[in-house]
Length: 325
Image (tube, rainbow, N blue to C red):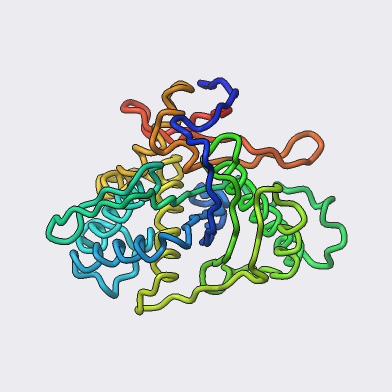
């Protein structure tokens, strides 16, 4: 498997005047299912508070363009023949790609009207896989009384590491134009999946263990219920679900089909940039705007994370390349 030089440099074209960014983090999870070869995954999208209304407005324009104002844009609903939903999903991923670039936004709105902003939207995405939550050693959760509580603690541990990894990788002052990042809000899918989150424990762990350039200002993790009224929060959660499914698909955990191959094209093009050499990655407009990692358990039962590059092979279909960035 191809490995890449793990030395790192400051963001290409980085300015000396670094900025502070306040963000909202949206989260969704996908549960492991050995019968269909699904791993467990935590998915995150970080949206700056300064640009979220613009981003939301553009997402809604795409809905309106394809007459899908009330449609649920979920990965499991993507299928052949669902034309409106499929077009919205593809254009949402195209918009996400533009919103993640480290350069001013340029986008064609309704009626192909050019939309040009002076600043990047600054959106980031991060995916964290593990083959199964059961891979995490029970020895670290001896104080739990039931298997359900132990599984919840494992879920929270991986979620905490995912948030820490997102902020450390995408907002590190040594490698980006950011001086500091402030987590103003944490949101997750409706009922927190089937595993309720202990808000107090999660927030306390984040407050005590985040990097010194990361601050958390919220005291809760908000569940965003599903709704036909497409608020900012509902759209961002649906987009998070879409990115989760698309990333899992590109990592080879689903059977390929033409419909989904077309829809995931914008995300595939982003992830393919991780295959470039070091200078090519640093010059990319998406440098440190995304990460896909796999959690492994070492001989000491400790978690380690290895960055992945979901890519394609014309001969062998979808496969994984593990990268040390």
